[in-house]
Length: 256
Image 1 (cartoon, rainbow, N blue to C red):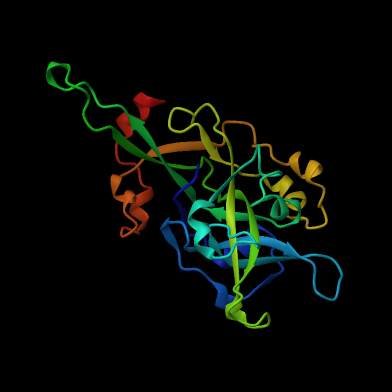
Image 2 (cartoon, rainbow, N blue to C red; image 1 turned 90 degrees about the horizontal axis):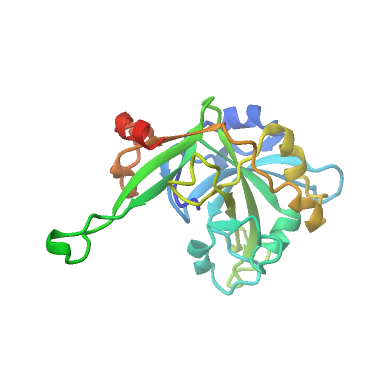
């Protein structure tokens, strides 16, 4: 799964790296090394202009945690931060977005926690508290990780349809089975894509779910690294570049 990530790449660099044609500086999001659900994120997506014509690649600010268009309230967002690749085409909350509202979330990397069972207490009277160790998963080459995502529009009926405050645009991150390096930490990982897959994934005209499912393939293993980091990342009050830095290289070497 993916419940926290870091995103510090500037909008200008994202525009260049992802061939973005349109973005509004007023939608910029401050760099964050501890992004949590319901917080704003930058996403690359393509939309067909209202008057028709070819789709335009845009950089937009979305809120992490998808709210289905049919939801009565936006409170469901905290439960829909991830969408499983194996069921995303059929789940009511995601299938419409998966058909034609796919996006990419450029991130530095994401955090995952590995759970270690506590040893038995003295005299075998049960076990102590399990220990959770955080890791920062990122590309070995240092490039942004392009996470596959979905986005959706939700309207607040308390506002007129043409009122900006009446609309909320949210997103979810697609997850898949973890590659061998990451499986000891968690059995699932965010689906990330390589540049050669960007065009098809973002294409809103590609609206056949069965065709879109062929895009749900993670790159071959070997592109990612997992770095053990400080437990400080567990609190969203902590937000600084040091959260992504290795804390115990000896433990990381012993694990992998």
